Structures are given as structure tokens and as C-alpha cells.
Image (cartoon, rainbow, N blue to C red; front, top):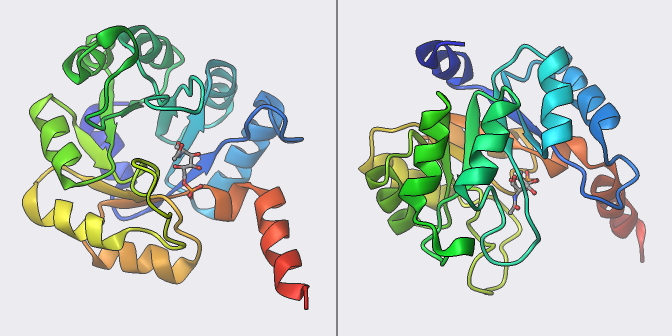
Length: 225
Ligand SMILES: CC(=O)N[C@H](C=O)[C@@H](O)[C@H](O)[C@H](O)COP(=O)(O)O
């Protein structure tokens, strides 16, 4: 899909993140493809997904713009950490490759520019997953095409807020002209709407839509005395 068409298709809409980690009963391409198809039927304008097998399978069945990433471990920089991971994600046919764009040290000592360079060398757009405004500004300097607030609340060990960081969405959107995606802990349609009002270009929702285990836990907890 041409770059303009991809961004136009995503503007103002809902991207559904379809991810289930190893150990989750829904882990694997079959279930994540079904999730992506269900999201498409429900009106999603894009899909975000993780891992080479899931991305290939989703790409084969879903025509919506696809944001791909590869999680390597769960500590430090784990979202598409190196140029090699970025090239492999791009090779699945994902339209946008999401990469950790925090200012933390990267495995192999790579600079963010190198990871983004690998995305661009593959003809894809680079999404910078950031934790704060300075990450966003630095990532755009490094060549990122779009920014997402994915990592706000997941860096530095401070207690994680319950809701999305709409303040960060607004701070970034006020400073930059690049598209800013609101991502992370968006749990209700009202929060998604408010993310757009805060200046988001589009909204990414994962757990609240595609993680029945977590959704069940929230209901079950609410019933406990
Ligand atoms: C921090 C991190 O690793 N975030 C990941 C990034 O792809 C996913 O685990 C999240 O599910 C995704 O960002 C959507 O967020 P939420 O599930 O909160 O709607």
C-alpha cells in the first residue's frame, strides 16, 4: 500500500493490537488471525501484531494496514530491538514497523537511527514506541515517521497508572507535526474518543479488546467481596 494511503486509512480510527504471548491459550497465528479478522469486521482501520509467524498469517488474510513488531525478551529494549529484527518484521509484509524508541541502551549497541534505517531500507514506515516527550522528539530526529505512546508507564519502574497517558499524547501532538498514536491502557470507548480529542492521529487498543484472560480477571475481581 502506498505510504499516503496507509496513513489516510489509519487517520482518526481504531487500530486493534492482536497479541498473545507464549503460554497464553490464544498464542499463535491461528488465533491471532481470527482476532484480526474479528477486529476488521468490527470496524478497526488497522491491526498491530507481534512475531514473524503471526504477522505472516495475518498479512495473508487481512488487507488493513498492518503494524508489525517483534518482542525479544521482556526486559529493557525488547520491541524490535535491532536492525535485523526490523528487517525481518518488514519482510512479513507489515506496512509499518514499530520499534522501541526510548533512549535506553539497545542490544548490540545499535543506535535508533540504524533500526529505523533498516525499516526504511525495506520500504516501510517506522513507528517510534516512546515513553515520554523527549523520546518522541529524539525519535523524529532519528527519522521515525510516526510516534506511539506505547511505552509510557513501562520504563523506569514508577507505579503504572491505570488509564492511558493522554497528557503525553497532548504534549507530543502540540510539539510535532508527525502523526501521534495513542497506545497503552486505553480501556473504554470513551477513553479512545478522548485520545483523539487530545490530538491523537489514531488510537491503538489491545488488552481491552483482544485479551479475554485479562478482561475476565477484571470482571471476576469486581465480583469479589
Ligand atoms: C508495553 C508493551 O510491551 N506494549 C505492547 C506493544 O505492542 C503490547 O503488549 C500492548 O498490548 C499494546 O501496546 C497495546 O496496549 P494495551 O494492551 O494496553 O491496549
